[in-house]
Image (cartoon, rainbow, N blue to C red; front, side, top):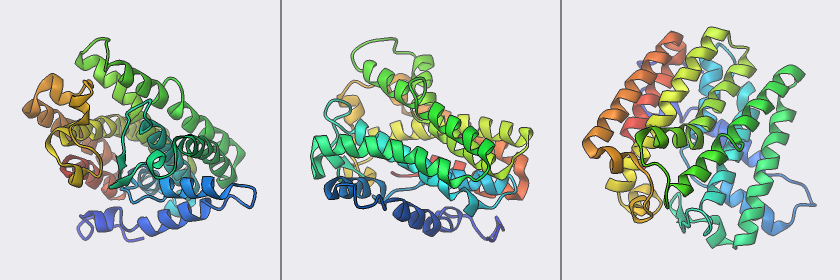
Length: 301
């Protein structure tokens, strides 16, 4: 794959080069055999293959490339991460959680199908993610490390715990910047970090490389959420592909709510600049990581 950062400065090149690989791998992973009920399979495909940015699987491939590995060897972990992400979106959208009827510009899974099918689709995606991950890494030691990495990121102390605290913050609890960051470093940041770590694992990255990726992930994941909060307040339903303004309507704890728009924009800028600094460790090999930091700041949905 070409790696000239001067020639590749937009999403069509930085992420788009990986998109066909990711989409083909996701489609292939949706072959669950004859024993999977047709309606369940349709709901899984609807959720997993929905149009999206594919940032998390792209991060897996970007990290593998930055660490000197072959991105195509990281496609299994990339699929696994996107499966976990898709499951979390299905469940987050449910009436008992964030109660959303629009996701990625179309009906959420429980609206398109029904609530029970949506829950089961999420359950299946979570399990299938670990099957794909375990089967895609031939080295047993690396496979075990990868499974542990994704399990920790998706578990009670990280993604799920962050979502629980996010829901709880709607009705009580500390409304402080420290608490908000604690929520989002788990709810959003943990899966970003796991994506990068998985790419590092399959490429046999050195400890300094993994340390730089860890720091990059902390800043990038938080920057993504800060911008997400900004977009919820300033964008339209059409631009976002989901309901805008719902965070304020539900009384959610958000960065603009605590800091105001100007300070929130400044915080996003600071986090992006910091993440770019961490990506610089990789030189030209990490050009996609550098580009992605800027994209997170400038995205509109």
